[in-house]
Image (tube, rainbow, N blue to C red; front, side):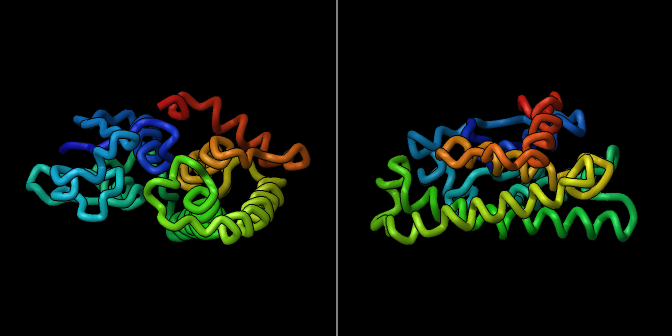
Length: 204
């Protein structure tokens, strides 16, 4: 297999790197430079026509894209330790929280990134800055939602660290990169962030 990766602060490739680290897996990797536009060059568009990283090319030549889909594939091949929950209820809870991270926090954060940040100005044309700015409040509201949810639990989907925590950590850290870090009153989310960041996989 060949994993097409990109360096931080890109959050989605980091999800897969963290997942691999939690599993203790090593996969042959090709690092793309997003700043140099490697993900938009013909060579990579032949791998993923969407021009997005990450991607995983399988031994049969087929390609899987989308970070969570890649992690699910790797989970099926390497089920221990389980990162997508245990049993029907546990699997559903991890799915639920992962989707909440992606839709409640990831979506408005992506709008802020695409329409307000100078890094994206050359590829998002035109930038609708007023629309982008209007989503900052949604990002903050979502962070407060996760802060409240973490008041009575160690990890997002319960007692075990899961792919939902990986998704949230990568999203929160990317939010910090674009200037939307955690507010002082988000004590539960900050404590969770400290725990998640202390895991060796967070350095992947």
